[in-house]
Image 1: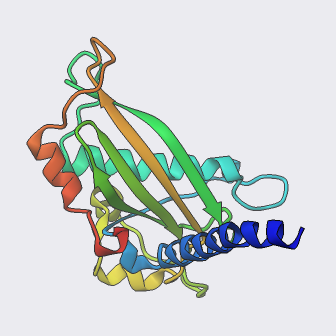
Image 2: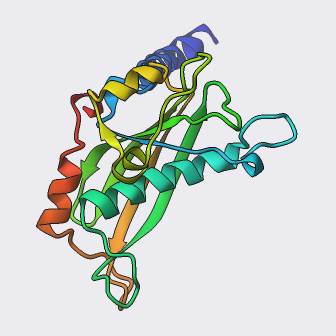
Amino acid sequence: MTSWVLRLLPGGVRSLATSSKNQKVEDCHRYREAYGYFLPIQTRWQDNDQYGHVNNTVYYSYFDTIINHYLIRYCGLKTGLLTSPMVGFMVTNQCTFHRPVSFPQVPVAALAVEKVGHSSVHYRLALFPPEPTEEPPSVDHQDLSDGFFLGHPKLVHFAALACTTGSSVHVFVNPATSKPTGLPNDFRNGLLRLMHPASA
């Protein structure tokens, strides 16, 4: 019986080490420096659940918003089925909750690109709450229209540690055939702009 336990122990040790490594990666992803693009998100009254904070499922819509905002604004994504040469299907979504936000807070969503394949894109995402001050962060039309990139002075108004982190994978297909299609160079270059050392 003792030898049976000893044979199992190395596998368990590896499992613990892997878990520890994954936790360290997750911890790194909670910091602003792990992301390249940011977009203020206006929470809505209907986002709150009966516990007084944003419902878990709503965070996915925030992440969907920043992804598609960036693709339209900086990668040239066309959103009309009749005019677009490709359509993005979300095939994987994951979210980890560290602390809640609630209406009427205005957090900032964050986006990084971990991998760009032939027809797929792997994103890393986060949500940073506003700093707890008497005056909420000043968000204007240009912030909502353009977002901003790492290093922008307005980021100091948001917490350095994310309240939520997540990941998503897009697969782009030809709308006529629903088969994966290669990403155009301009589109790919816009995505590569958000590749970050923290994604390694």
